[in-house]
Image 1: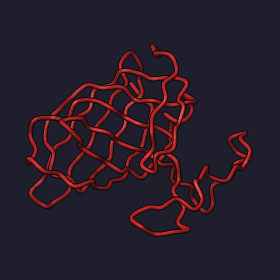
Image 2: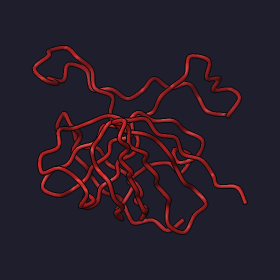
Image 3: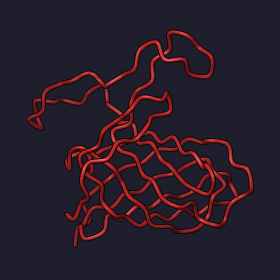
Length: 163
């Protein structure tokens, strides 16, 4: 996997998050008439790809960087998405979804609670917690979109492509 060195990104709650790696990737979003859009990501130079769906009104393809700390976060993981368009730039925050029955002993990892930022003022609510994203995509926003786009949500899953 070809990756660039560490980068620091500011979370939605103005917290600094440092990522050790960033990989180039291709992203496609296809808006459907039913209000759901298909989202596809392929990491350049790897057999890692992902698929998901969003509630946004963006259609098109783009290239960008996906920032991460551990390559295992890009394999067989599920995420909730928070997608923001600012000044023609697209940013997607990937926050890990942990299942109730997820057994950490089976994959050799320790069971760690999610990283949160307690007492963050999100939408004016005191005492709420924000989970910091595990991965962040940044790149130019595809051209097929309305002029003003409110942030929107989605779900996503990474997998290894099999031949």
